Image (tube, rainbow, N blue to C red; front, side):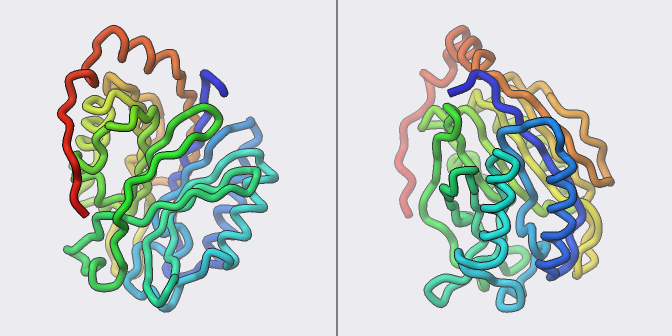
Length: 260
């Protein structure tokens, strides 16, 4: 257990539907992190970009990308989070994986598939919200479009870090900025969002705006927009404990049940 969690945000371009090339590029970036970190966060669909051609890029949970993430996590002594296209039981999932140095894998299937792009026609939606413990921190991982649905992110589990991995386009990036900050404030947790940059195969432009916020909505990172970048932020559990105790807003939260 640690009061401090060092988190690396990797804002990167993604080669369209090229898993091998994306693994090579990300491998170089991750190995360039020479200062020890606890957690490395990559974008949504890290091997392909946000594609609806699931059959072209889909892998299994025993595939090359999971094997690569296991080896890299072990060698860097850091957990790695990102999503990729997974084929399982004759269905496709936009699945977030968190691979830890000891080989443990936590998964979360995207709940809110992006209907505007037809994601719901290709990928099966997840039904379960996931939180997990890592180095003494309780973490809730979500994916892109989930950001627009605050009820799904509501902090009924007393998590300390909320994570969004994304392919969020330039045309709506102001919403990304506003909602990331709002999720941090309303849930009294750190909130970290990692988005990609560059053009995808459908000619949509992405400008990053990856960010980390504390429980008061203060920005912690200095990641530039419109370019690849790696930023390391240090999160402190004492910050959460102090403001949750002092302000007590979570004690007044509403109780509810989400139907599946």
